[in-house]
Amino acid sequence: MPSPLSNRSALLVAVVILMLSSCTSPTPGGAGLGGDAEPASADARKGGEGSDSTRDGERSKAGSGDQPDESGDSGAPGGNDGAATAGLGGEPKISGPDVLDVAIQEPATLDPMRIQDPGSALVARQLYDGLTRWDAKHGEVRPAAARSWRELQSGSRFVFKLRGGMRFHDGSPVTASDFKFAFERIARKRSASDLAYTLELVKGFAAVNQFGDETHLAGVRAPDARTLIIKLSEPYRDFPAVLTHPALVPLERDAVAKSGSFARKPVGNGPFKLAGRWSPGRPIALEAFMGGARDPKLDGIRFVPYPDAAASWPEFVEESLDIAEVPAGEIETARQVFGDEGYKPLLAGYYYGFNIRSDDLDSERLRRAIGRAIDRQEIATGIYDRSLADPRGIVPAGIPGFSKDACKSLCDHSTPAARRLVKELPRGRRQVTLEYTRGRPHGQVAHAVKRDLSAAGLEVKVRAYDFGVYLRRLSGPKHSMYRLGWIAEYPVADVFLSSLFESSSPDNHSGLRSDAVDELLARAHRTASEVRRAGLYRRAEAKILKHAPIVPIGSFVTRWAAQDRVQGVNFDVMGGFDAARVGLD
Picture 1: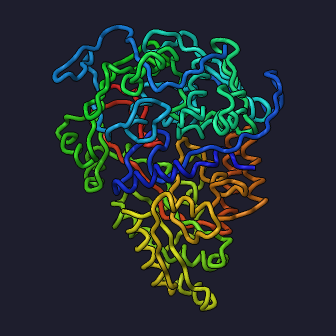
Picture 2: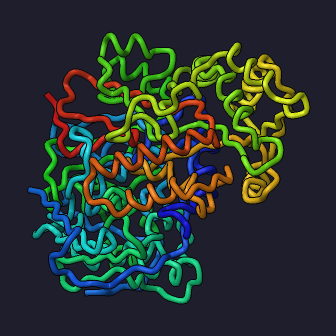
Picture 3: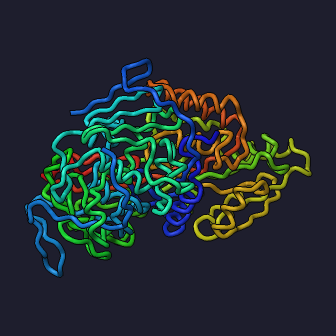
């Protein structure tokens, strides 16, 4: 059966290709948005009903009525205190002195259902609170709008209890039905949301998303205002981490239905609310909101759009900005002046995969020779301006519980070692065809790899394809050595393992079929202990790499800098930060 959250190719490849084609350094984004990746949908699978009673495998996690049918792309906040007034040039004014100024790339939308770019994701993380959140300081999933949750039936049923007293930015109460509405809005086929894949394990997803026969998810119930029950089609203990995605947040259905511009002035439930309608190209002003799950320390945030990190850096150095991304040319200087607390791994990787079912690449010796021949340092410094780091394996650095070097010799550059392996091959088996998506920087990478492989004694052809053609080619049997980018939008190793290598996954373009790998991944999905689950994922990764179906090129990094007056900011592996606990000195 397809792996959890597996059919992600169209979106993830698109997001990464578009992002990496537009800049040499990936920009920060929430929940892994950006880079070379692919979200989508997997066939819903059969799951048991069961009861809410305590049983073997139940786990509790604690911290400090079914409705709508609308899926409109709209909504209008009323504001609960009228504090925001128009500033100079029509820019909303934020009341209070403690305002954080942050440089970002221009967001495309503020509608959770449409969020894909880094700027949108970072702003959305402040406007909305989902059931859970990622705690960057402790490296774990923590309750957010949910006060606690229980995991039942080996991780196929989750019961969330919401915090009391939470309100939307327009003063309306936040209830379990608001989560149900928002989830169904994303899942519905007519919504055409690229983020629907995040809910594909929910029971009844196929009927709502793929067939469009239903408008309600059978696996989501709101028996009362503070209880949300989610049934999955199969066990998946990492589902609370999936729910940290900035799209999976509650929405007030009347607000969505009232306005034709919900994406420009949404009603959220997070620690900050819009101080006025957002106009593209203008700063986004947020002011503190005290009616949510967490009360912020700041009076507000001003997100200022820039085309790239190089454009915002001079203003950051002049202290006109509090937080900004570090451009490639300032990495060492910024480290010395501002420290490297904002230098974090990004959960996005760059790879070359092998169609091991093809006659050209069925030799493991050839695949290992290719891995040893590639000079990753040259690609990282010469093409990506050090925004690409040495790979540790398939799973990028930053995933909790992972060893530092799963890749071992496969990722160690050695032209002599590669030549020795090539010489052991019959002369008729020393040809490779390298396929990639047309455009920069992927063409540069492809030709750099070609030079490395040629130096090892291989005859190399390179073929560039337009994006749509490339995707169709990956879905068929004729592709060869192919460029791949993959991103995790929440910190779970399974996004890189089951999605790419589980035998029946539609995104398994390598053709690897391994009962041992499948069994390890299935065990991980139903294992309650996070430590044991991480161990099973590590074992699965090691078994995959023994077959060498993929060559990691590097994993991306993100680099932020903050002024000394900024206190309590924790930059995370999703490429951003949560401003609720940030203060100004």
